[in-house]
Length: 348
Image 1 (cartoon, rainbow, N blue to C red):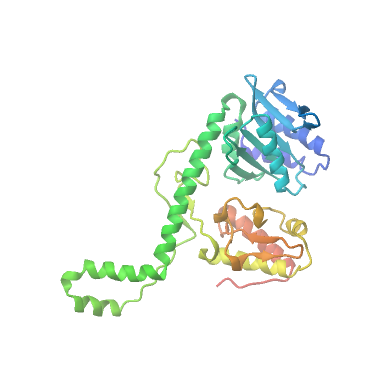
Image 2: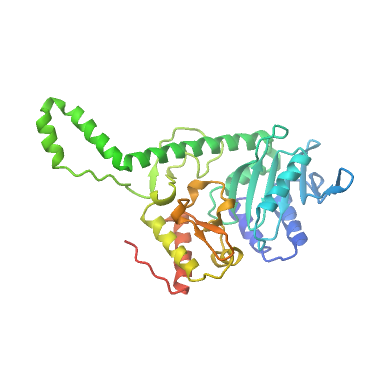
């Protein structure tokens, strides 16, 4: 199977195409046919379907297998700024064509799943960029290669994602509790109980000489290999190192440093609208319109961290930063942008 990195290399050559139909053709020829193995007879471009007496459905791409629609694709050129309307349109096509899986392809790629007919909301299965290092890339290639594709595999992947997201949330909540001031008092009680045989006065005197200062040991933590996942991803405890995500001001020094840099860049450009801000940062996972946030754990969401810009958009900043691996590339690029605007904040 061709690697995700190879896909990124090839699609990069077509990313500057402004004609949407030409870019759509590139996605079909390269991604679907050449590298995922879908046959041209399984791919229908912009089928026009009557809906009622006045409306017609014209999805960009419909993929069929065994005489059933398997997934729908909505394709935009990479320069297009994705909006909620784009996703709503994709979900509408999924409902009308009774197709549970939809893929949005633009500057980034998103996969959605919806149980057809039960009134449930669509769920984001994965979100990835056309970057070599994106940890979801190989998952996508495995899920959507024609020989092994099934709707059930997408459902299983979504279940595993949600299970591990819930696991991360529980870990995050426990870490927050352990780091809280209230827990210091609980810890004193635990110690007092443990050493009760030493005498209450001795334990009390000992505790008065001790200062409790609990802090995170590092940005990433090793988690137990407690589950078996069908496909490894950054949300799986099966990975050796797992990022523990926290909301708002619970984030560490590096995350706050990146936030402060971005905030100052925005403050240096008080008249720019969100589209222009997006162009400055060039990657959607640095800043986001708060109304578009789907996973609040990945953003600074505390009220005091939300930045309102000139056009009224409330902007939130990513908390996924570090000085190693993929995070280092993100930090280096933000430091370069900050340098261009004459901004320098010491890292304490």
